[in-house]
Structure formats: structure tokens, C-alpha cells
Picture 1 (cartoon, rainbow, N blue to C red):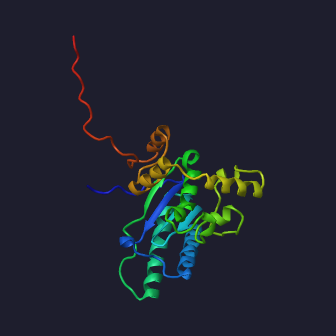
Picture 2: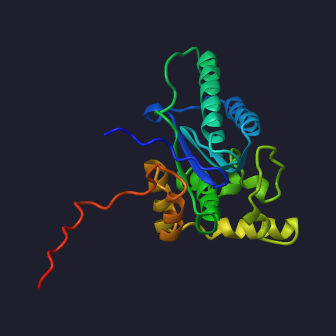
Picture 3: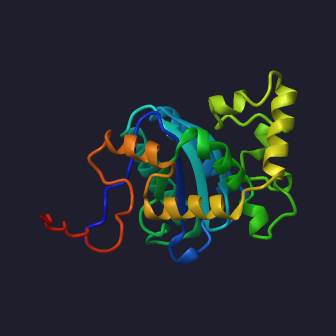
Length: 233
């Protein structure tokens, strides 16, 4: 069965996962992490994509972003992916692929899942047992949202601005939001939707989104459609 084209829609948040081939490490030094962040910043600006949240793990990375134009997202990811592989292969004196195929992505219902996805991203290093808390991990956008540093890659979504009337209030509210965690159901939904490429949201959202694209955006129900019963006189 032919795989579906990626779902990319302007004005909607997208959660992206890009994995290393065979789960291999995609970073060998702190300079490599910084280089990928520089590439994301450069190409996000060129392709008019707002990056809301990210985390760079040892063998994969997550990005939450909103493209102004539908084609901006694939252009950005293609440019970042190719440039980073060339850089990494040259530095490590290696050849061949680095990524596990194409990136995975899903479109999210903003009000239902955007802030949950941000917390899901920030808590990745904690779930992996790498750090005790998100504040202990250097390669994510958590520090930007909690006032520790200004990250030029990050463009906060309007929902973040609604978390408080002052920077201190927003930072405290976001820190509390992440500390409250992401429940297992939402966590699994975010993972499954991103890896499968289906849109994630409530039924009305998915139905409305389907009208905006010719690409199927949700999984079909298993089995054949029910047969129509004959009229009974």
C-alpha cells in the first residue's frame, strides 16, 4: 500500500519527530546540538515557520511548530535534514544515511493539545531517565518559557501568552503546567498520532479539517462497511 503524503496545513500546529537510523545517536558533541538548533532557526525563518517548542534527544528530536504556508514545513525539514547530515557526516568522517526515513508529523487541535504537546516535549528527557526534571536538560525550549534564558529559535504561541498577564506570571504558570505532567492517555495519543500521521483532535475538529484537504487525515474503521438491510414490507 502506498504511503500517504505528509499532512501539512498552514496556520495549524504540527508536532514533528525525526529519528536517527536504527535509533543511532545523531549528536556526538555539544557543538552538534548547537549546530542543529542554528539550522532550525535559519530555515524556520526562511520558510516562515514559527517554532513553539523543541527538545533534542540523543537519537531523535521533537519540534512543535506552525507554518504560515503549507509548503513551508516540508521545505524547512528537508533543508534542515540535508544540511545536518552533510555536516555530521563530514565531521564524523562517515557516509550514508543518518535519519530513519522521513520525519513523522501530526496536526494538532490547538485548544485541546498544544499546551499538552509542549509539556510532552519538555518531559521527554525526564521520561527517558536522563534528568530529574526538565530544568536540568540543556537542549530544550523549557528554559525559554521559564525565564532562564532567551532562545532566539522560539516563537511562543498565543496560548502561552494567555497563561498570565506578566512574564513572571506566565513563566510560573507554565512551570506548574509542566510539573503537573501529561496523563498516559494524552501521551499515547500524541505519540500514536505523530508516528501514524493522523490528525489529533476531537471529532468535530477532525471532520472540519478533512474538508480542508484531499488527503485522508484519520484512520478508517476496521472491517467492511455494514450492508444495507432490505426493506421489509
